[in-house]
Image (tube, rainbow, N blue to C red; front, side, top):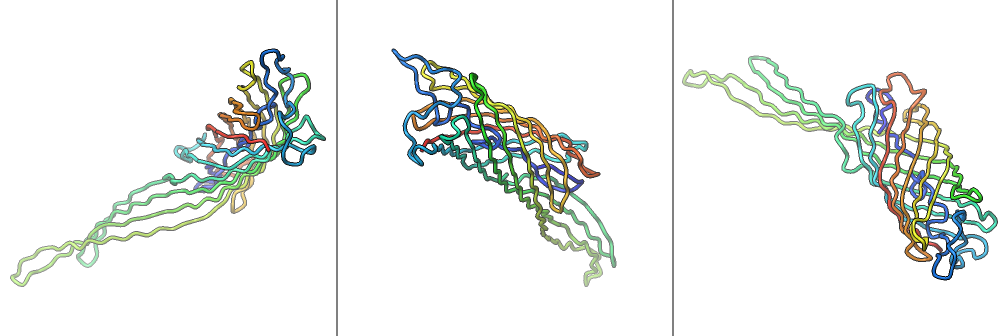
Length: 326
């Protein structure tokens, strides 16, 4: 959640890894893996960033090969702010999939489309206050205590399209693409008022006493806002086999991103920062593989409106996926 103006609760989250937004599958990894070396067979060249498929593609034979990668991303977010407690940390669980296409007409380039959706449930408290009051009227005295709690529930959609092109005679690849994030925020303020009214009473026998009449009231208000982030990004990816049979890979990505954010009602600002990931991929068969990665990025905000308290946001978390070739 990035607070753009004082008291506003527009949330901005980071671009996600491709194959999980923001991170492309490693060159030669996923279900598109180099052929295994073995006894009597020379190990594949380390320069083959994207090797030919081990079997003929099922979909669009002779035209394209596809990999579908169901994914889950557990995201932690934290903030750098000019005000104490201006924006609390939060956690999200996102789920979705990445679809990778390798066309025979562009054998050096893979295209990765990723979609993830999730929420920050259970909604965290972003504010809590208490107010004790007394008042007197017509001889009665009222005591009340008001407790107010603010929670923020966010539904988040991440979409990203990347192109990954291998660099000849190396284990490196270029990455470039664009990402769209949309966050729908529901902020609830729930208040509970408890107390009592103390009233003087004169009994029939002339004795003066008091009676206490308790009271209770509960109510809540809700407001809805949104944040949309549009970014372009580019950088490098690297992969390296760790075993002789090329079943285990180490891979990583490093990218720079630049874009704009928009809060509702419209408040525009700039976003710039790094996006880095590192992980391992294990080939289960010629058709499937498993990968685990950890991704971290920093969003620096610039050209923000007056009153903005958040200066940068840090997003990080593990992601897991299964890659299935069709």
